[in-house]
Length: 309
Ligand code: NAD
Image 1 (spheres, rainbow, N blue to C red):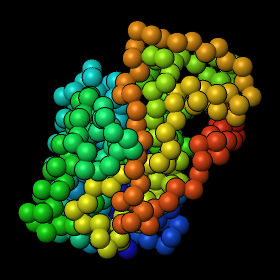
Image 2 (cartoon, protein in one colour):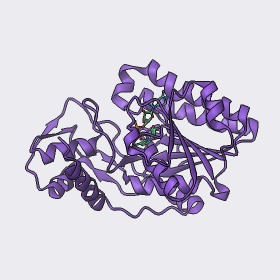
Image 3 (cartoon, rainbow, N blue to C red):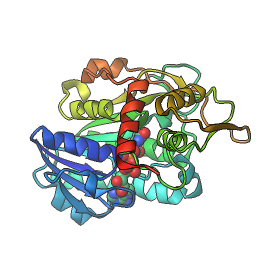
């Protein structure tokens, strides 16, 4: 098949692009390289540097494409609180621009990578896709509103659409920005260097951490799954892990001796997050295979190889 991946040089985009290329597919990528790293991509992946809001460029890149994966986005929850307009422009505006270009050119299917963040605080766990979204940051609002645009424009113009709500993905290749770093790479680096692990709130809040290879498996399946059209599907590990437990696992995996401190002034976000995988299994045949313990080990191995500081 012929694929276009937006955000192809990013953490999840590059893992997906390389897998599709290894499977013998033709893969084009678009990325503005604001955070992406083109060196993460195999030479078989044809990357174009450009912005998701550049419609003429999208028209060109979409020629003869069977399926588009849309991952290009600004991805930091705390950053989105400071710059909501930017998140609206890239995550919402960029999605509308892409869907309009897809409508103009004609593509069979779009797979949109949304986020478990759209659920926000919920009374019932694990989270099923029919829960009423309760976004709690401009990032989550932008992903939810992009979901609606993808589904609605797809419905109006007969474009198949699949929305995957990915939970907390981690693994080798996830970059560590100087501010607002995701928790797993941040904790691994701090523990490796015997630095400080800061736990916001009391550390009992839970998240669903899913290894990058499992996310890739689900994304690959979404391109061809028969019953997936118009569906919203969770992609997680199905396992709920508290921050305290994550800290324990990180310390055990690294063998480091970091200082662990609590920051009670920050509540640490949503209390609980755990994905129900019932729909993912039924529609995508998805069953995650990498435990958090094993995933941390694999991620650490890579960090040590490349000498993460
Ligand atoms: P990432 O930052 O590594 O990837 C995003 C990519 O989009 C980057 O390569 C960046 O350069 C590119 N990009 C940003 N703005 C762009 C623009 N205006 N035009 C073109 N390209 C642009 O982050 P990631 O973790 O790989 O996330 C990929 C997608 O998955 C995002 O849509 C994110 O919302 C979603 N997601 C990620 C997670 C996670 O835990 N990593 C969880 C849920 C959803």
